[in-house]
Each structure stands twice: as C-alpha cells, then as structure tokens.
Length: 274
Image (tube, rainbow, N blue to C red; front, side, top):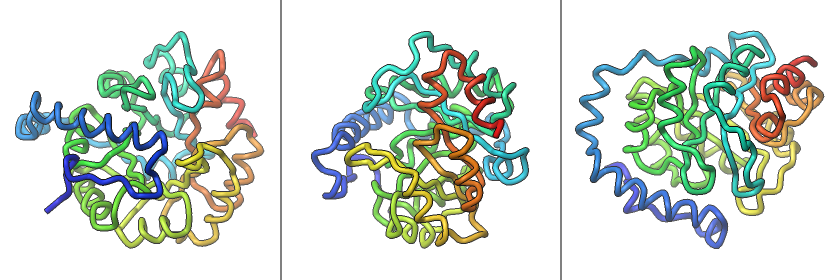
C-alpha cells in the first residue's frame, strides 16, 4: 500500500531543520485538503484535464540552454524575493526570453505559493509547468494534475526507496513526469533504482541551505547519459550554465537569480545569452 501523509516520518538526519517545520505544516495541509476535497472528486475532474506537455522533451529538444525558470515570491533562506509579484506577467516575460519550462512553487506557509497560481498559469502559457513542492502523498499528485501541472518535483532525501518508487509510478500513471531531486551519490542511486527518468541535482544543502555548484559537478560523471539531468540552485551567470552544460547537464533550474531582478525576463535573457 502506498504511504500517505499521516504515515510520513521525516528522515532522522533532517530533524531539527527548517524542513521539519515545513513538513509538519504540509501534513496538516494535506489532511485538511483530503477532507474538504476528497480524492474521488479530483478523479472525476481529471476526466476533463488538458493534455500534458512534456518537460523532458522541452529539455532535450528545445533551443539550448534549456532553463526552467522559477516563479516564487519568497523563500525561508532569502525572505521576500519579489514585492510586485504578478505570476502571469513574469511567465510572459520568461516565455518571451526563451524559457524552456516554468517551475511554480506551491508551498504556502514558507514560500508564499499556492496551487491557484499554477492553475492560473495553465491558461496563460504553453510552456510545461513543474509543480515544485514537498510531495509526500499521492493526493498531492492528483492535486497537481488537476491544477494543470505537467511534471512534479520529488525530493529523494525526504522519501524512503519504496515510497519514492510508488510516487514515481503514480506520477507516470497520471500522465505526468517526475523530476527526482538528489543532493549526493547515495540519493542519486536511490532515485535511479526507483525508476527516475529525470534527475535534478540540487546544489543547496537541505539542512544548512548553503549552496555550491560543486555538488552538480561532482555528480555529473555518474549520472547515466540516458537520463536527462537538471542542475538546480546557485546558478547566477551565463558562465555557470556553460560550465554545467559542458559537464553534461541538459537543463538548469533558476529561481532567486531571476526573481530578484527588476525584470525577470531580462535577467533570463542575459543568463541565456552566453
């Protein structure tokens, strides 16, 4: 049987971190959502869902560099990123500046995101949409599909191997794609063994929130060539993208560097220009 939120236990090495607070909020949020909008009701709504757009195709077949441009208002480590937060305007800027896909933060309490932003963007862009959140329950995958997500982020560090494999299968059963995020070699092997078809390497340490591109550089040689890989966090310049591209990465997820700029689209254009 697939693990649900009320059965979830945070790995011991993440206890006492900001993640513990986030997950406690997430469990309460999921349980409340299940009560107000049961899974069976979402299943019915999915019969009218729009076709899924492939994130993987956008990364490997589009014009390089393939940047997954992120839409988020705030983060626990950086605070408020964008005072004049207009997701539709930002998405249009990204589209005009060559974004391959959009990452949409839907975590409410610490990142000031929500599923409504994702649902609105579904009607204002033709780019693939990645739901970026702390996914620990199959109910969240149903939510993502209903809101218009084409892919979801799964964080290997949060999930036991069996739970990760089950969630990947559930994502694929819904027609979407899973971007499985890893931070070290152990998590990479766990993701690959679970059947990950897209790997994201997060350069941000989930315990300390410190960032280093060396995380991506060190893992690059052991990521199978058959699995598209995305470097995440800490990408600030066109030179960073060149370096990571030369190491074998197909895509680059960039958030704070763009969201802090007066014009996120102009910042993306500059980042891709190299």
